Length: 426
Image (tube, rainbow, N blue to C red):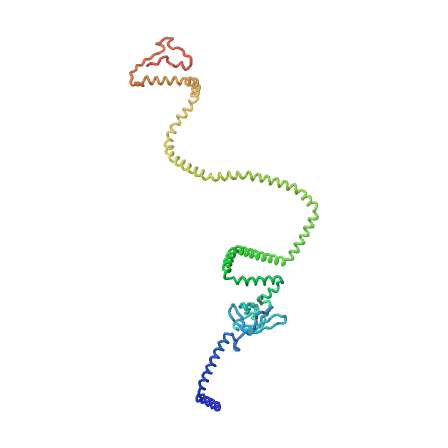
């Protein structure tokens, strides 16, 4: 120890005493510190796993693992968050790609976990999206392997092109060349094309919605058919009994073939009768339509008539209310007239006999109405002190057949003339 301290002392003494050596040592130390800082930052950004980190390691099997480069920091993500990386890759006994994954031990992984290999950029840089699963499946032990059925991989462009024939590949190459030419003139033609594309997309929106509706309908149909198939497949005993019953039914029909033929022979007559009945019902329907129209019209006018009847009933009620006091006052008069009505009823036979003898007098009076009119006019003129010329002084003389003798009143030619006076006193 003392020897080492002596050597360090001599070296420090040399550094201090030799010109320029201290400066070089300080610069070298500064460079070492800067290199350490830069190296630590680079290693941190390169996702270096330190040996003392607590890691959980397991494997996942894929049908193919394109673009995987183990040891270069390709990530393992859970819900988009980095939790580990791909350590190495190899091939299992079945010829499938097996990737060893290392993640933080605080994230548990279960045996029903799934892994998906996804591209992170157009340069085909990959990462693994891990769905860790959960209970009731047990946890995956360290070094465990997820089978191929629990993994998915991306489809590469060469795999899709490999299924094309020669003519299709040539057509695709021509399309790419024409696309290159079209993109060369993109600044001039692309804006108009984009506007037309937007217009076409808007017009195609109803079609897309209809296709989506049709897709949903087909999905429900396929689901229903699957359920029906499952139910039918799980009920084989009932299907067997149904087939046996159908066979028995067919045998019974075969035994009664003659009766069935007789029924079929009567079917044309029954069809004609059914047609006649249908025609009759159609005719009845044709007659029923006008009746229904009239009934509809009547139903349309019925509310107005009911309103008018209601008004009439209201008016009649008012009239009855006003006439009720009159009826109440007339009731004593009617009671007083009842004895007179009974006496009048007793005289009606005599009055009927007298009325029967008045027909001849009435007929004669009808023929003499004009003369009676003149008589009444003259009579009124005799009793008046005026005529058309003004006031007048009148005298009145009474002449009777006794004063004139037997020939004074001559018979007249008509029955009406019997009552006409020869002279009207003036």
